[in-house]
Image 1: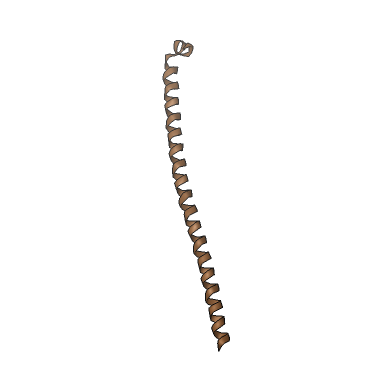
Image 2: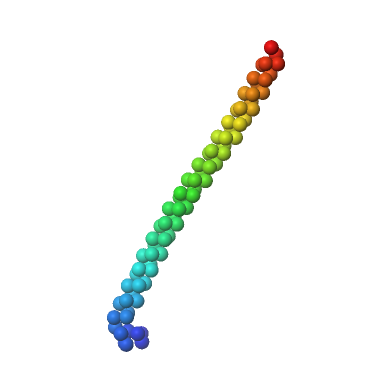
Length: 74
């Protein structure tokens, strides 16, 4: 109130600054949401790769043991 009486333009400057801060806050919030989505996709991809790798190892071990057993029979 005092600043408005001393300098009426000060109130407008303060309001504009507050608006800019609110816009920045909104932009930061949107960026955080986007980063969260990217992290979720990344985590999902890593999990899928881990599962695929585990399955390949199990498949390889099964094939190797089966092949070894067949060679022993000969």
